[in-house]
Image (cartoon, rainbow, N blue to C red; front, side, top):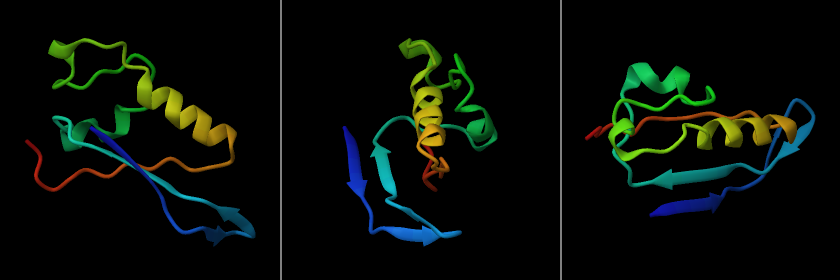
Length: 80
């Protein structure tokens, strides 16, 4: 399941932003892979057996950049 939440608006460097928080209950990623998740066609070691093209986060990050946003990613402490 994917959960999307619109957070309260913030102001940064004279610009107003509406942060979106997207969470899922997936397998998670290894900490050393966090820097690579927005590269096109990159699939984490846990995603490889399940398929996919490795484009989801690359597209999301590009859309974020095109809208003047800054994508950021956090790892959940309890990696499975």
